[in-house]
Structures are given as C-alpha cells and as structure tokens.
Image 1: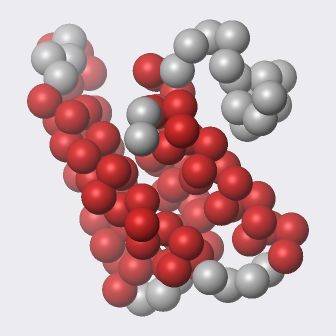
Image 2 (image 1 turned 180 degrees about the vertical axis):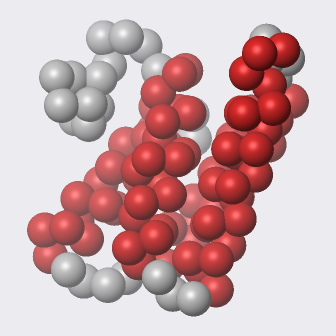
Length: 108
C-alpha cells in the first residue's frame, strides 16, 4: 500500500466512524498498523534540516505513543485524532499536490 492509499484508508475509516458511530476503530485500524508503523519509522530515518529535526522526531515519537495508548485503552477519540492530525499530516508531505481537494480529504 502506498502513501496515497494509506491516506485514503485512514480518511475512510474516520469518516465511517463519524457518520455511523460504529465504535470499531480498533478493529478497522488493526490491518493498517504495520503500514503506519513502517511509514512513521521512515519519517525517523529522513535527514531533516537541523532546525526542525528535534521537533519532528519528538512529534513522531508522540504519535507512536498516542497510537499505542489509544489501542491499549480502546480510546476511539484519541485514535481518530492521532490518525487525522498526526499520521495524515505527515502523509500529506508525500502526496501529489493535485491529490488533496479543497477540504483536504483526498476524496476524488
């Protein structure tokens, strides 16, 4: 799964939860965890500019910790938040400019 597809999957899971309140986020995110972990690990391996390196590393580690905490505590709100405002914000850095529509969802 490439970054674009991962972004779409996360968006779709969050939209379904907001629309239907099914409370199945743990179950729906589970198949994506290895891909998300791999993506976040790759973020740690990038040679970031010195002025932002510490911030990015700290932010990525915080995202990883929040995912684990949300999963361990079955906290759907935290899980949606960390996926939308953590993982997806970094995914956006690698998506084509024309992919994201006006509201930033990537839905075409």
